[in-house]
Image 1 (cartoon, rainbow, N blue to C red):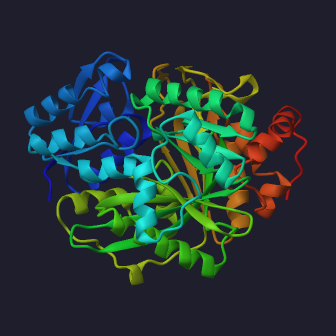
Image 2 (cartoon, rainbow, N blue to C red):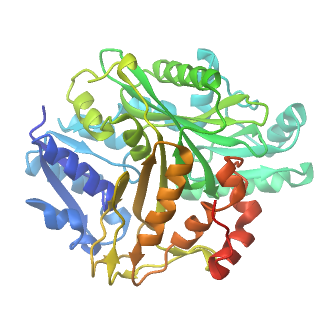
Length: 460
């Protein structure tokens, strides 16, 4: 087992990995930008090193600085968390070349699954259902038009190297395809340095369902159930839950097996997530694989009792999975809400600043993952996620009511947050019935914001 792990991240995920290391009797080593010198994990750490100025490109994306610290501090491994360098194949290769274990899959696997067009082709060969679309990269708007005419509108233009909704455009009108194709490609080049594009049939109003998998180097691959991530804005998730109301036991089993098949086809090792869209006829299609720990991983941990970060570290150290598929058991229902420092009433404008009084919810079945503390500063340079509240209940309704209560207890003085919006979502009749899809926020935002002001939502 590793003796010392460098945590190449910040915020709540850095605190999460820090705690896992301490519980495994592994010394955590933290790095930070100048903007994060007073962050919680830095105050907790015995070893912490500044790796550069506030902006990500000069600090948390600075591979040379991170590996210099890792070697100087005698670290056996690097945990990248999510975001930043977590899905950077060159960084995984650089770690290997430096003799430092990257806690995640190999650079080759990250490349194979990070290119959405290549991953799609791999899944087709493995027999995993994929959304109808191009067989590979689309070189021009003219080629895109031919494919769109063949599969029918609406279609979705996607960047092969994309993520988080960037480099993606929906096309309903053939007359807009050429301009939107070039617009998406320009955005992909600006965001990812890669203009490779592909095309898919746009599945209207789908559910977004993902399956958590674990795979060790001995060839054991298991799935830990699904998470329904359909409550999202511009492809950014706000609320996740499990189990999904949309899945029957038979469909759940079928999708879980497809997730395991997908991971095996990729030659995957470590924790990962297979993402599907589910249409209104219960047909499911692979869309991508996330080759890292997910923001919403606590949902699975709360249902199964399996520490995913601990498993990540064990797998990277060459140890087999601590559980088999037969050992995996699910208890109750779990919901996660992402608390973001942003103002929904002003177009989700980011709201950095100083936190004053802080009260976090607690009680039976409540978990809070955060790096917040009273008088801490939220820098303007990074993602707006500042906390995650995760609850469990014996039933879905119990979990909903527990999350409502938890959000009511949460007090963050200073920056605006999306807490009221999340609270109103939990009262919406369609959410309470489990009758929602990825269009939920677009269809209901005006009503939800009005409720946040008036408090008119009725209790269920």
